[in-house]
Image 1 (tube, rainbow, N blue to C red):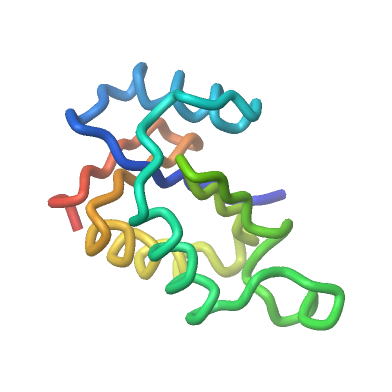
Image 2: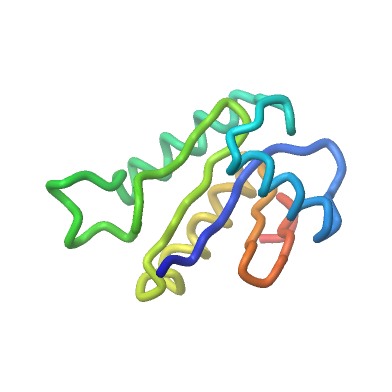
Length: 116
């Protein structure tokens, strides 16, 4: 079981319903849902620098339950519940620094960049 978070850029803050729709669409692989911005790649690079990505070699110590999902529009992270309290706040801070929205689909929380 995992604790999932989505990260993307948006020009206006989403409502929980709108963020849930965005999350569903990007996780279904749909393109053009939100703007593709360089901040996604920059955020992804910082996340990988801090925590690595899931590989066969680091499966025991990785905080991820599956490899990070990245498109030009979003990053989706599936964290192990046992590591979520440690890792999720760091991811939210990094996302805010890169002006990305964080969406928590478990409880439909939307965290805009200024909400860190």
